[in-house]
Image (cartoon, rainbow, N blue to C red):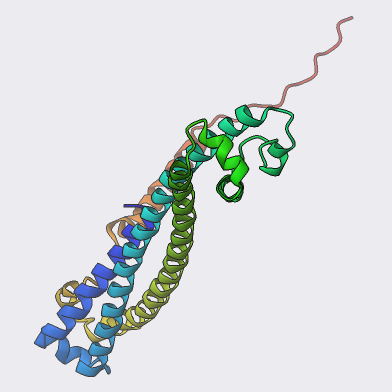
Length: 258
């Protein structure tokens, strides 16, 4: 799990603990209600939490679907590429390297690397091979019967369908991410206000704040408490070092000898 997903999961878990405990603890609820966070207000937060959890889970699900669609495209691409290369090699052998037919079929250029280019060239090649009776007859003598041409063309068709499914999955995943982020932002805003109010409502009951996973630092930390003494020791040490330092007189110019 990457850093972003862990962060989102932690935010959701923290909100879930705070809201659920606030709703189920009579004592916590009593103090919070005095500051406007009664059952209705807490239910508002619960509704936002449920929406954020649902949006998060949906985004994970559709992201998985997008990844699966991408993997399907890779497999279909490899199959279509092999089908295209096989027919292209036979066509070059049948018609010869100087035959103008190669240019018509797009075989006077290297096999395209980009998926979209390969799809366009493969469709053109197979459509010509299947639709041109004279060409189909010539290819049939080299194993490319009508049945084989159609079965190989089906691989190209599957590749095109896989690309369409991947693009649809990408769009769905992008929208799911937008919806997830909006739901999380709404929950974060509610939780930010809730935590500020809870710190006031429960300021005399730190153990109740802990039930809500809200940690408040009361007074100075040990490091802060020790800071003045540490600064004083440092100051004294510098004074002592200054007292024990013997000043070095400036060097005098040498007197010239007679």
